[in-house]
Length: 197
Image 1: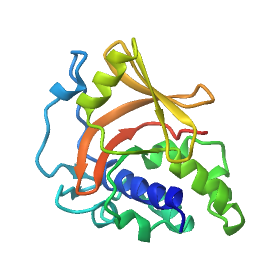
Image 2: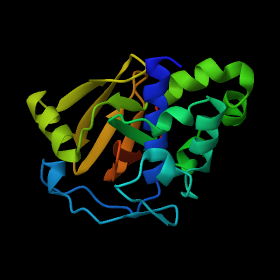
Image 3: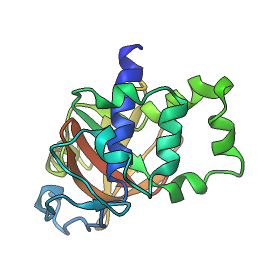
Image 4: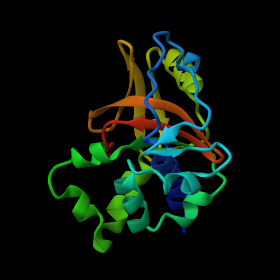
């Protein structure tokens, strides 16, 4: 399995394990790092333990069944247990459900594995970036931070009023709804839309 796919897998697992975490609002200040953190937050009805890796946590989240199915279909389950670290922007089941009718079913077909892998790895950035790190990058970038994903294209982090957003290459904007869900091999930011490279 190549490095990009391995990186994607780890990122997706992180997303699966944390997307259901009890919602936390970003602080009103420019530093996302000031947001309060919860020990072992709940995601999809299950506690997310920072001592466990993405896969170990993700499989217990009832709110990320679509993401888990996608990771399995892309053959990325084994890689999601890797050391990373990775920063994952994890869409929820609702985010996948908002895609055009039939999109998810089509992506899960074996013949579309390459496309699915491309989309999944587009949600993963190599390295561990907390909300504080993202806020600093946005400040240094004059209001936005452009991050290269494992897939190869970029996403843009910015702040719109009190909300932090992630914009994909097609101009679609996702809101970060839960930040700083720490895993042993990275960190997850839950988002409300699926990003497209």
